[in-house]
Length: 370
Ligand SMILES: [Ca+2]
Ligand SMILES: [Ca+2]
Ligand SMILES: [Ca+2]
Image (tube, rainbow, N blue to C red; front, side, top):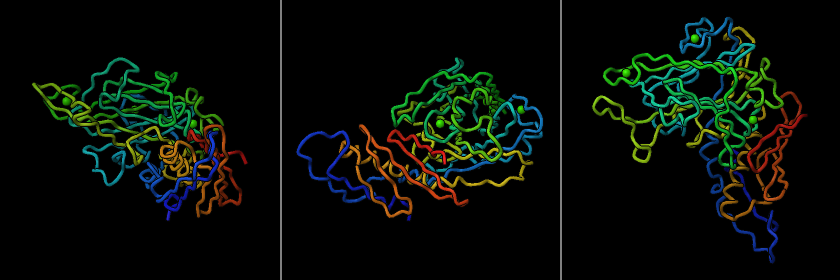
């Protein structure tokens, strides 16, 4: 039984930010599972993982994977619906690869698509109004200060910085523009021509380490052998009609877009880094490294269970719980602060060391130095 199902939040008399008298009787929580909120859908989505190997020769950013290094790089899993099972499998296949060298992180993706189209030509417009491919990168895995990239089949790009997830108040800084970023599209068919059936489009992107460094905080950028970054990919796919030989996108309210992603989020919301995949960087020969799971993931998940339960509690009772009981092996301490809380837990790692993990009520999750 997972922690979340045994999570029991009990409201005690004291509450944060409440200065009225007399103190009301603590509300009863009839069904603790009722407080899990989105986490009940998210926790069952185990983050995917990938080993990113070094490119052995320069990568030409042309939207094609002719380079021998791409040939050696493994594919990700095929993308799935953002909500994961039991949602239907995507209508069209999408998969990706990654490589790195001293200068860049490289991403290549193939998007099966019978009708390749695009309309947006101005940089930093809202690209997901077209079909698009999206990259999300949170190098230090703290849920805050991460980078988002979107591109359409015309190779028009949009870059954003999220200070915090939208659920925690954002904000998003639009038009981040990583200096030196390069991207390209290769269309397997014809673009904006409905008279034929296309095979799809592929994208190739170089993200310079120097430009990603402001997102890395304490982690090494470029990464070192064995380091893991949180990354996810998404593809937005609109339903279209072909009218008089032209593509017409269905209005969102009539037929919402599909969101097909590498590592399913459990809910329709990409900017939740706690479910993004783990990318482990390797200097080994392609295929020679083994993925090492993040030993802090159980503690991260325990804290995120608290975070989501506290959100539900706050929605219901207009304050956070001051006390938490759980029968998991990870005791969690809740420390009040003005209009919020900090949740802390300690996890013992297989090598005998211990790590303290701390989560704030705005979902920032830090692994404290030993
Ligand atoms: Ca290429
Ligand atoms: Ca971060
Ligand atoms: Ca076409």
